[in-house]
Length: 114
Length: 114
Image (cartoon, rainbow over all chains, first blue to last red; front, side, top):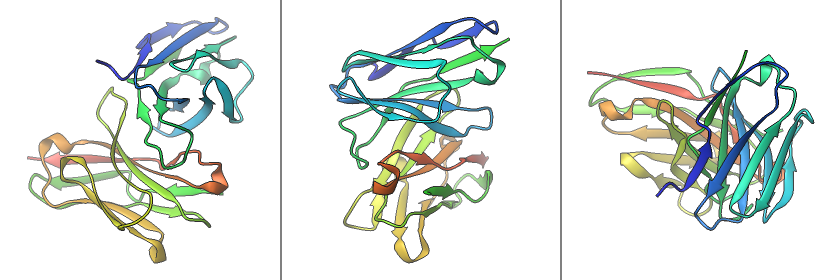
């Protein structure tokens, strides 16, 4: 059973389009995250939700909007896609928001904006 | 601000040789320290972490790391490299000052020569 799953795995789209990435975890965790990994493999946190409440909101363009319908799901919607949004997006989850909690990562969604 | 420095974007070793991947962090408060591994086209997987207690931490696949507060280091070692160890390795830190956000280093690509 996949612990943290993301769909789709690959996403190719045109500039200006709107797209969503979905994430689900079956670990019973309270906290979920979105990370962006750029072409140089640098990983940066974007958002974090704890029990459906937004607790981390990094300096991300407001074209990016996360939504957590329940503890097990965290989706990422991106409006008006730009070339610079091309990256691999990772979802992760942890037992809680404590800094010592291990984060479990999904397989990633590779977004390519043409 | 918290930061993580991984010396060497690429490290190449022969199969059976010692693996040493370097990580230095900056933190003014007690940190939590992590090593993650990323295999090609996959998500990140925890190798090991330091939270409190014993400064020598053992992880999966024969890896270990030692927290040295005086040197602000958390270097990753493995006595004998295996071909399957070839991957990207990320050091990460979280602490109270960063609101327990996970801050990643830029990664080190480990190449294992036969």
